[in-house]
Length: 203
Image (cartoon, rainbow, N blue to C red):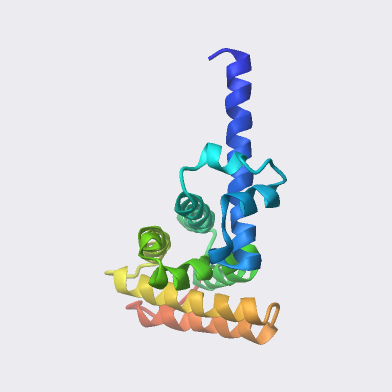
């Protein structure tokens, strides 16, 4: 690929990334029902026709937004797994890191994620994307729990994800609440201990 074509390709990828970020912002600020090609392009500061150049339909835009949110969460969990494999993270540290994941997640990402969850009931075409993000997060959590000695982690992973989702909703409604942070950390440790055969001790 010659330099000019490579540069054109890179600009295209960058523009698509900006459109996806704009879609997440529109979902968070106005709701999923307000996502249109024009709204996304306007939010990104691009001409109105730009979105339709990169996406075939509005559901495709929403799918890309949901996928990006899932990728961001699973990337953070992958970082935790890397640390766990190097034995730099113990059980308490894992709980604290998961608390940071919840409280440190971009607010637009969190709001857009739950907007999509609720909308999937009314719009079946979104169900696949929503199920994908839930599955990706559950699978990443399963791997993390396996690292800490949890046997048969599929069910515990769902419990962890449900716990995290609940506290994430609280964080959206009441951001920065220190009591919620302490409660989440305590709940994480108690849930992890309940699925371990030996008493919880830090590595």
